[in-house]
Amino acid sequence: MRGGKHGRMTVEQFTIETSERAPSDAMRRLRSRLMAAGMRPTRQRVALGGLLFGKGDRHVTAEKLFEEALAADLPVSLATVYNTLHQFTDVGLLREIAVDGARVYFDTNVSEHHHFLVEGEGLVDIPGAHVDVASLPAPPPGMRIARVDVVVRLCKDEG
Image 1 (cartoon, rainbow, N blue to C red):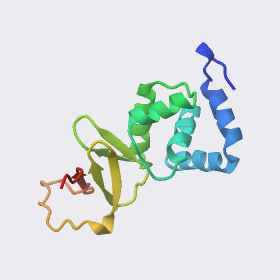
Image 2: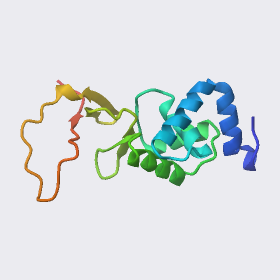
Image 3: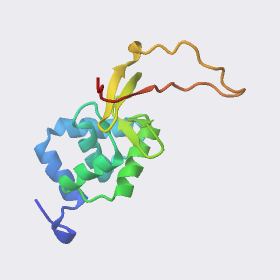
Image 4: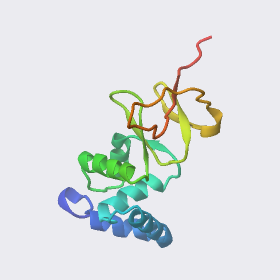
């Protein structure tokens, strides 16, 4: 189904077509998940959420999700993708993992775990029980440690 400006689908057409392809209970679960998190299940949130959560646990950048949206003919801007990812993070649907000043991944697995960063490839999960953070400094007065994110950087062994 195509339509809208420049032959692309509108968000409404995408949502309807996605609902027809995907099991309706999956879309209902996504809408319920958004509402349980205190978010209005707008068409764009549901459409992006379907792309994001429909592939199981994974790590995605805003740019990667934007590319997936374009490939699915979902008419959203990169700014909308960023805003939606940050909104999902703010309500606990995603975890944000900053690996350096320029790269941020969003993780659909919000359980306690850590990551390997394979240079040039991306993130790989490390189960939380497999990392032992033995000693942390005391937080400043009036602060508490919210969580500890460990990113272990890897490169190919040339030996």
